[in-house]
Image 1 (cartoon, one colour):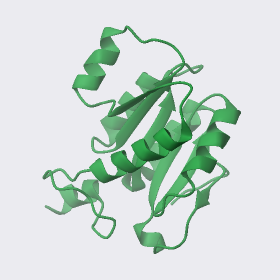
Image 2 (image 1 turned 60 degrees about the horizontal axis):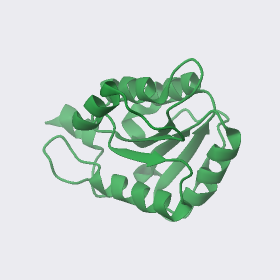
Image 3 (image 1 turned 45 degrees about the vertical axis):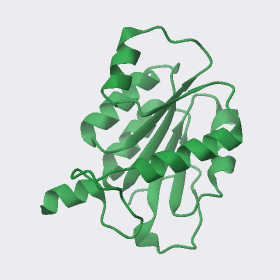
Length: 165
């Protein structure tokens, strides 16, 4: 697994082979730091925080088999959050995604992405940290294998499962 220098935090009370990756992508460093600290209490995940969506996309591409969730801001330079999440879903359909923004989104593409489950969750900023942790836990438990069964942390990665079947 390529980790680079992306502010990794992990809880090691589960075997490393069972740990799954979560990315937080926001061009505001304060937000990534705040969310990063809030999510540290969740066991079994390694959290990567990115302020550059292109770096997040590169890291995802290199480590997509281990990613289970990506949380992204909508309004970012070079690549907006919807474009980022679409590219990631194109690489790994079963990854869970949460989009967040401080603005109202009246975009038909956003509505289509919600219907097509390219975007699995949505937050309007400001986000309560307890709500963030609850939604991340919900998304982690909703992470499904291609056959529709829920992923348990002791099972094989869902996208790896499709290669075996």
